[in-house]
Length: 309
Image (cartoon, rainbow, N blue to C red; front, side, top):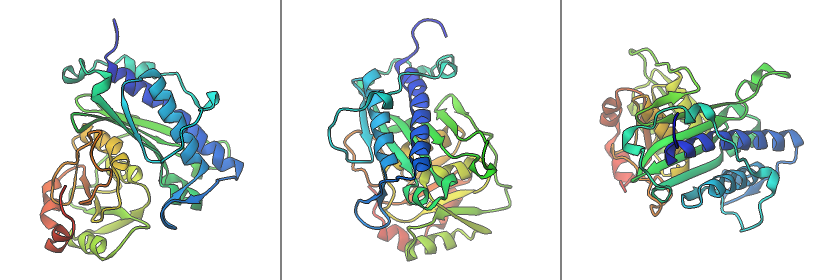
């Protein structure tokens, strides 16, 4: 690319390498055997040393290169000096070579909000369900998720010793999504992916109402969106307030970049401005295709229980 790449392209290019660094940190902590687990609010809400170090790495690396962006991370960490070995200054040349969509080419740093989940699927991480684990960096402008990076630190781990671990996918509205092979569930099948560890009657009632041929229960919001874009599920249905903006910003951008959609249970879009509340109070409904069908199936009891923002 000639001249000076647009700010948002530089940010995505940096987020790519920063996510890879965070993925390496997540692997290193696991291999050390010292996970440093603490309970945040309850037994299902965990934080590990990997969550803490990966978030420090992501936030410090991005704010060093882009001092005026707003970064919102999942973990509430004390202000402290960040170790220099956690800083990643690199960027993806391949992303910088791409032409920025015209509507984003003039964006300034201060207009961008970055939502960070340093380790999505922490519970699964502690239980060794490593394919559920992702690192999520989402970029929002004007309240909308416009770009995202998902790193899977343990992609290929089932292949055993010597396997090339990890992969990084990214996407941007108006550009498309990269780092994976887009596939769809055959049109005559409805496969619903939903929560593995946060289920309740509302969640199961809503899943049942979709009349699925199959239900896939896995951990991690990032992982569930990967199921959608790789043809393993047709819809991600979670009729509960458990999800947060940092869980959905990056995955939503990648899903939208390939024509998919993520809304609350009422069909309304979530807003990713810097000042919004972090909880996705009205649940998550995400699809690659046929969003309207799934919205039309949401039971009244669910709509009444989950108030739209």
